[in-house]
Length: 116
Length: 116
DNA sequence: GTAACGTGCAACCACATGGTTGTACGTCAG
DNA sequence: CTGACGTACAACCATGTGGTTGCACGTTAC
Image (cartoon, rainbow over all chains, first blue to last red; front, side, top):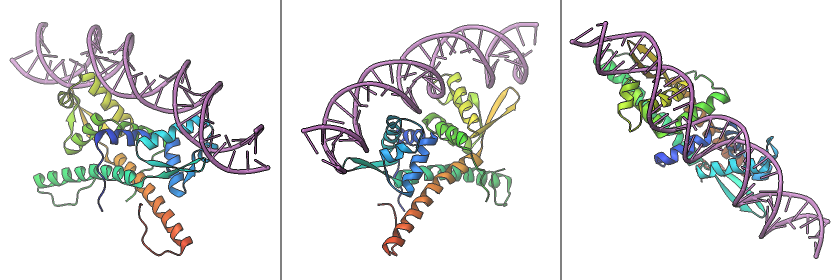
């Protein structure tokens, strides 16, 4: 499967967006079922405007999209971006694996390496 | 394999730490080969103190550890945390998959669902 | 038409972040 | 011993972030 590549500035936005528990909760909620901004807002102990801002941050990071439906704005997840972020972290693990392999090579050690 | 669970506050710190290109570069560098703080500092167009702060942020997020070696402080990666973050994003994808399955069930649609 | 609802946006505030410079201290080389 | 190196830490500044309140505007319900 082809995963869209994110440029560094977009990676910044994605991880920054995920660095807040409320926003992560919004993502998990709309992954289960899309919801309007006001519906989401009722779930949290903060103002509507605050939730609106969180959704805007997620939208700028391309983690969610909004779709107008009458007077409501329905929030949908953008799984491609989540997948791209997951693959980036997987890539870090592969780097680590690569280092283990190089070390094993040097040491003449054929054991399957893993994190210490 | 068992992946250590991160509490929400730690997830905050991990993603916040990864939301900076310099810090991501530091992580990739020490994944390939551990390096002292001063060695890292020479690679970037900023002061030693700035790099030192970036390393401190990564350390607070448990993405790296420091190990004193003489007068040098050697930075090592903490792959367990990277793995935990990757698994968290994988979990989001599974939620999405779960929703697709529920939708398919309701619709009587047996096609393998994927992101639109 | 009117009232309530959902949204967008601006102004404001407290606080964290990313950078700087400067100072101090332990360690290693000569 | 002395000097250079690597580090730690504090003070400072500009900017971004997470929250608030208030207001304006389109949409739906009655």
